[in-house]
Image 1 (cartoon, helix red, strand yellow):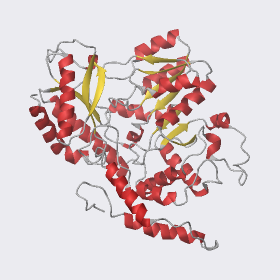
Image 2 (image 1 turned 180 degrees about the vertical axis):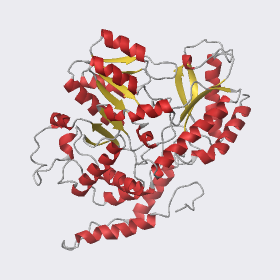
Image 3 (image 1 turned 90 degrees about the vertical axis):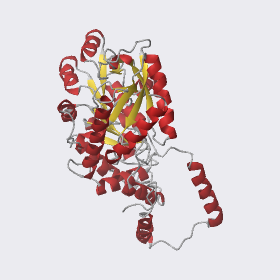
Image 4 (image 1 turned 30 degrees about the vertical axis):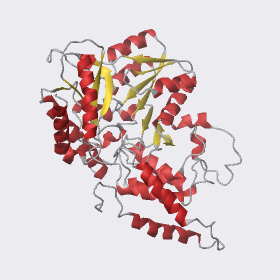
Length: 457
C-alpha cells in the first residue's frame, strides 16, 4: 500500500497490527482474566513524541537519496511481525522460552540455506555478521586447532579481531587490482604456512567485490583447508539473475564450501540484529553441546540454544524474518530476486555514468551493487581532498554518500596523469541496495552533478 507521507515513512499498514493483536489475544482465552499494570498514557505519549524528536537527528536511511552506508529499511512485514512478537517477547534460546518462534527460526533459516542449494546443514540466526563469523571461525579452530586463518586485505576487520579473541593465528592475503583475493599470493602462503581456514568474502564492505571461490576450491583439494564464506553483505545475490558470468560462477560454487554467513538485516530487509550462520556438516553441532537442565526440560527436540554460542536471542527477529520470507520468498524469479536485480542494474548504470564523465575515475566494474569512484585531480592527495569536499557538499544537497580509503593501485592513474603522492586515496562510495535506486538515478545524478559544480569540479 502506497505511503501518504511525503518522505516515505510507511504508516498505512499499522492498521493491520491491531487486527493481528486481536487474533493473537484470542489464543489465550482459557486463562483467568488478567489486566497488566496500567500505563500512564499521557506520559507515554509525551515520551514517545520526545523519542520522535530525538530520532529526527538521523540521516534518512530509508530514502533513495541515502546511498552511503549499508542501510536498507525493513520490509513492512518485518516491522509488523517484530512488533507483534514483542507482545509475547519470546526467547529462542530454548523451546520453553520461544516455542512458536523457534520453529519459525528453523523454517526461515532453512529457506536461507536453500539459496545455496543446501538441504542438509546446521545453522541458526545470530545478532549479526560479527557473531555469525565468530561461530564460523570458532568451529574452524576446533576442527583445525592452531592452524592459520587467512582472509583478504579487503575482508571485514571482524575476522582478524575474532581470530585474536579465539587465540587463533591470522594473516591477510593481498588482493589484486580488482580488490579480490589474489590467488597467486594465497598459493604462496599455502606453500609456506599451515593454513587451516581460508575466509572468502562475497561482497566486501568497502567495494562490494567477490573473492574467486572456484579457484580457492581448487586449492582446497591440494592443501586441505576449510573454506568459510563471509557473505554477510552479498549473500542474497544468489537470487539475482543479472550478475556477470564470472560472478555468477562464484555463486554457483557456494554449495561446495564449508560454512556461510549471511545477514538478513542487510538485503533480507530485516531490522538490525539478524545475522545467520550455516554449516554444511551438521555434525559440527557436537561442539556446542552443554548441560543446562534448567532451560531444557519440556522437550527432547534440539533447542536452538544447543547449536549456538549465544544463549538468549530474540524470537522477534525470527518471527520478523519468517513473516518477510512468507511475503517475499528468497527464490529466484520472485519479488526479492527482482529487488536484488534492480540494485545491480542501478549500480551498473551509475558506474557507466561515472566512467563517461571526465571529472571522475572508477577503479573497476562493480560485482554487486556498490560503486566506488573518485574525482580526477592533479595528485592523489588533491583527489582525496576533493572527495571529502564533494561528500560534504552532496550531503548539504540531501544526497548522502560514503567515503572509503582504498589503495590507489586500484586506479589506473596513467589515463588521468595524476601524480601518485600517496599510496591510498579517499574515494566516494554508493550503496545502491534499495530497489527504488534504479528509478531515482536521474535525481541522484542531478544532485551529484550540481554538488560537483559547486566545489569547482
